[in-house]
Image 1: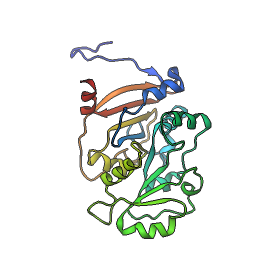
Image 2: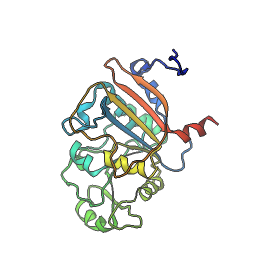
Image 3: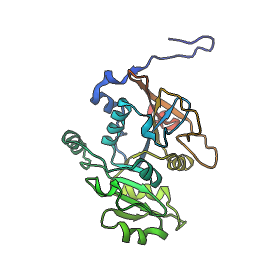
Length: 264
């Protein structure tokens, strides 16, 4: 239908359940022929912009969001998160069934994607689920200053990698992505948190944002899905918008210039 006055065109949304699992996966395929990392973020927020409920993003989700969460993990080569998200959400490794593993093999991917944790300090609990409820060891991308100590503490349960750039006390995102690409892990899915997503945004390294909007109001002081010190404007193009019978919205955006390039 068309709007009044300015000629704006409005389009009714498709429903996510009408696509089925294979149809949803087809809507979220990564670009073909990647030679470097394509960074996709998957985040959820309330209608009023809150990124967590009760301190956790999982408190916002529903069945459809959890299904999409699993689909995006199925498609990724690696899941990138920050150390704070691992602690708060009590992350484990990715759990996939036989059908999902076979589908990954057919796409030329490893059966299970590893979780890669960005942490300048390397201070992660060795007893966390991330290290023991997993089929593949996680990657710990840490700083030069912390790498040896982190290897001593976690080396038996994780692969610890120096991902510093010029500053030895921090993790450099471009270096981290280069290290992942060298391992053939170019289909990147980051699940945050807001600070990590803010870093990707600030450095213009985020190619795509998959945003679930939960049909609820939170109020209070919940953080946004992106946090950082300065304002950064990144124009996005909407690829599609889906919904389900509970009123969740599933929005897929790419950087606007990438969308324009794809149309040429």
